[in-house]
Length: 410
Image (cartoon, rainbow, N blue to C red; front, top):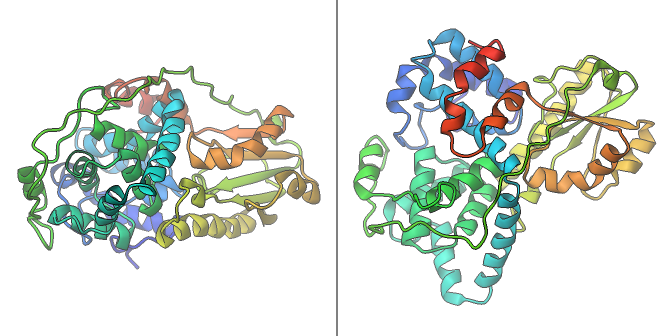
């Protein structure tokens, strides 16, 4: 069975099948057609982001397969898009106050909704696609119904939300996180900040009616009308800076770190054991999905179920692969008690990037780290790329060839 576009099955097998279907188009065809929003039947983009975010696939294996099929020149645009994901994560690791400030300001914006009827009405009209701006309303409904938006549509949507509808960008970012199956703390937060003129200071993104018409010409309802848009986008300002912090990356663990019985912990940003390299077999695999921590408001069923089922299904696969027991660590349980009951003291887990999963899991994991009983696995692509993610994407882009060469990719 060929995976159809916009069909999100939360398994590694489904992600690999979708990738195989897209792989022949990852070269010039992608470069030429990637900016067009063709509606829910789209085949001009990879649609891999849900599986990449969940850790069912990883960026290294995607780049390896693409460069085995296409030349670096023909696949340059696609490889760069993959690296944007890695860049955003590395940037947020070095500017963690961006995430903390977003969460604080989001909560304050929700409080304002409760006391301002006009503001709450404008917000409701936007999220349910009743603004009267046809293109925006189409995307709002598509977001709710499918859990996905084309990247270009995300930019237009954010620009209209901020500069035409005059709504808090944090509420729009929250809407995306609650509904996007591929919602990612780094990519989502920093993309909204980029549109607002906060990521690249003073340079905001303006959605234009003619640009929307050009790139939605193949949409089933296109070209999508977008009348009444703001004619200028004055970059937002914020009261504080977010100075860069030194990266504190985990050491590459030695084989000794896996010598005694240990538990492997999978979470909703690293749901599968398959992309990991483990020198020994775990005695227990723990599932720790926390997608509901994305927002204080209710998550969409599609985004919630994809994350939860990705981890649950991966536990079953891990049990078969390792011949060990599995268990679930939910938000009502104590990790210490769970480990004690299993007779395990050491936990191995893929790196927890800045974002809601880390916020939810780290209070207890930090106690394990302090006791020397936590082993963190960081992908080598992240380790090689993040030090270059200090400011804008260009610092990463000019290093892509050498990074891939260092990793033996391409």
